[in-house]
Length: 195
Ligand code: FE
Ligand code: FE
Image 1 (cartoon, helix red, strand yellow):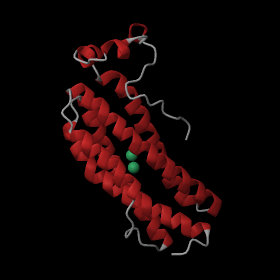
Image 2 (image 1 turned 60 degrees about the vertical axis):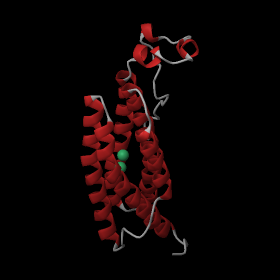
Image 3 (image 1 turned 180 degrees about the vertical axis):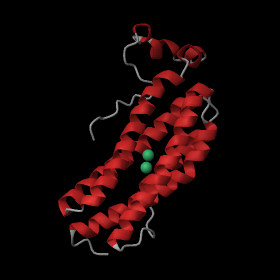
């Protein structure tokens, strides 16, 4: 399909997101199984249900547009989930593995936020009011998920246990302000807000 209009770019980007969401749907149950902390596990399970709804929203948009959702593979998501697969095979402390799962999941969320931010804006430019509402709902869910992951990252890792056997203990702990409870996130992800 030649990209000779914003409408065509919009459809192509939606197809890419449809592929991404379906790949995520397939990956989330395994991530939930691997998560040690109950809150992280239930977070993944909740996001699985949200993702099913997000897929349905995209299908609704494709139906309205009279376009087919399939036939495209989102290579970016494929790569991100491949990294997640690698993480899950890692021999790791279970707290640290949770932190690694969060890091992988946040990359996925940020990728989705970028994609949905674009299509939501295109829908606005094209005047597709119903689509804007549907895409904004999904965008909000992705943003909330990302923020929740950032908060969880600070809770899940028992820092003392995690660093106890690390050879770089001094380096990692130096200057950390755990005792004052200031914002030192395990994932290092300061989520952008207001997207
Ligand atoms: Fe999603
Ligand atoms: Fe998501």
